Length: 503
Ligand SMILES: Cc1cc2nc3c(=O)[nH]c(=O)nc-3n(C[C@H](O)[C@H](O)[C@H](O)COP(=O)(O)OP(=O)(O)OC[C@H]3O[C@@H](n4cnc5c(N)ncnc54)[C@H](O)[C@@H]3O)c2cc1C
View 1: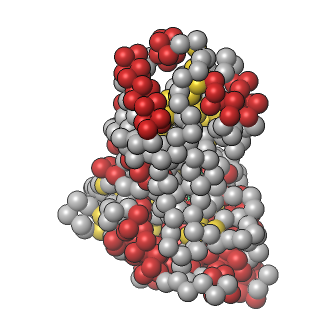
View 2: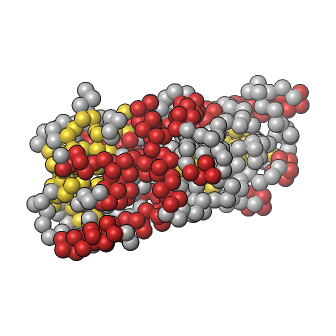
């Protein structure tokens, strides 16, 4: 423990504020906190850590019974340019190139101001993790992994996915709690912001312990780092324009930040950038359903042997396209963002497994066991089981088989090893799914929550997924561009808020 921390620990002991739970730990909150952080997840934890290191009194509140937020589920993939890791490997890279790559992949749809801020602060966040023992996967950084590739190797993740990030944050946060500058309230939900009128100064929050009554906490700055709205089905449908059939995310991502930010005078932007992820099979038709497995749709690892059709029985993308983004955009145009992988017995026997997660025999055994795996003696019967339009599928299969024989596909597909002709016939339903939300609270380049007329709401800030995927990745998925900006913005606010807070 460093000297500064020892000194703060002493002061903290005097103040008697340290504690992992709410129970009786807050002696007096008439004296405002320097910073109130709403959400102890990917963005909130570094914020609390860095604000504490600058001597701020920080109140960190989380509705869950443990810290970490979405890091418990996340793959924890990050991207940063100009890191010491890259330098040690002789990779020349810069925030400008990172910025250009995201703008290229997103076709210019990311928010220039917020993206610029993220790429400029990403390397510091990555270096900081490395300095504290982050265990990176062998061979990283890489160009890509599940999303369209960067032009430089700047994409990396840890041995335990999001948990590798959480391990570091947890240790660092614990030190600050022990120092006495950070007080952590778990099982406590922030229900509203303290403010006289929308757009006016925010002076604290109201927060309620589980089953208890809300209590007021005064603060000089309030930062909303309470994640997205992806577990709030109604808000998701309203903002994204589609239903979320999957259940793949943190149950606490309920949109509290959006509701409180909007009630405070802020607004939501980026809805138009909605885009599903491609390759998931859900466990069942129940809504929402857990995810059963991911199919291999990257031709680098397994070029498709099957065709993919929508409910009308139509193909909608060349199944061997290398671009994740092209597939995701094509799926977004299909009814209910879903499609069926269609194959016959010859393909089932000859092709490699449809998924990296299951062996070929697992896949064969899945038909007849899992509700979204279908098998039938004829294409017509397959349509009856799946709901796919029978004349549509018959026409599509016939056209595909002709193309397969002649070597020329209307969608430009080149990998067509076998026709779809030998019964029985099979279908597996793939569903578009979402790991983070698209729209987010509007902020300025200092991460201050702003009104529609671009006025910052005094003392109110936001970071993390609450800013929305659209701000940082636009209408696309760009590798690592949610975890890294959350960490980077949390740290940045932790480093910069105090003078404003005490100013
Ligand atoms: C399965 C999965 C895989 C992913 N993989 C990647 C990836 O590889 N790379 C990437 O960049 N992104 C990935 N993401 C997205 C990324 O992990 C998240 O966007 C990011 O971690 C969110 O960080 P956050 O700090 O904004 O929110 P969170 O980490 O979710 O933290 C928010 C915290 O706020 C708390 N909270 C919520 N409401 C309240 C309230 N009213 N009062 C008090 N507390 C509240 C929550 O309990 C939570 O602890 C993935 C997401 C999922 C689900």
